[in-house]
Image 1: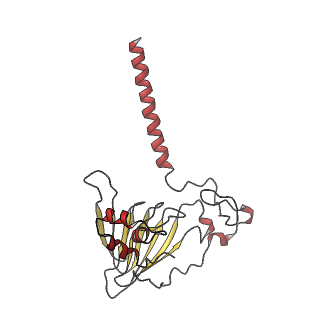
Image 2: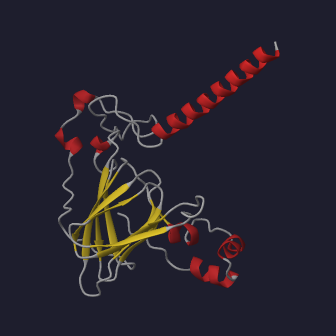
Image 3: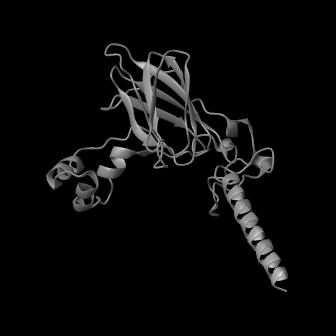
Amino acid sequence: TQEREKDQMASSSSFLLLAVLLALVSWQATASDPSPLQDFCVADMNSPVRVNGFVCKNPMEVNADDFFKAAALDKPRVTNKVGSNVTLINVMQIAGLNTLGISIARIDYAPLGQNPPHTHPRATEILTVLEGTLYVGFVTSNQPAPNRNKFLSKVLNKGDVFVFPVGLIHFQFNPNPHKPAVAIAALSSQNPGAITIANAVFGSDPQISDDVLAKAFQVEKNTIDWLQAQFWENNHN
């Protein structure tokens, strides 16, 4: 009887472990944009129904313009005070991107301009340099040593490609003081999102308590107050 009970306990433990593993695998499988269940699902921006993404437009009303935008991505953009301009084409610009799990961006960099440290909470990014030179990098998460907050960086030239894993803080900087740079980025979500670190921490509305930030950054409160008083401009269009 005791042996039978031990076998039952072992079997139950094995089943529980298997269930946990299956749950983790299932979570990983759904941790990005879901796969489409039809050829397309053009977003119906006028529908009052709220879902994760957008309701599908009647396929009988779909036309080629639902998959098109005269975005003029070949034209240079005016950069802001940090020296960059991100022109993102996602589902809000092309309704046909709904459920397809992809978007694209043109990024213009002024001489010594940068796309400051930021994350995309819903997308991996693959970036190609079209013109100029970029110094790029990302930082790993708070994982166990020796890879905790590891900084990986590279200098990219025209034609080079670099990948930024989903959710990790990354940046691009144009080190040339005389020439601009241009890149194209593809992102693995119809709506990748962007969190610019400085803007989010020091430019939130309402502001995060300076007591909290002074403790977190180990600086005086007047330093935090000065940072929060700055104008944190958005470079995403």
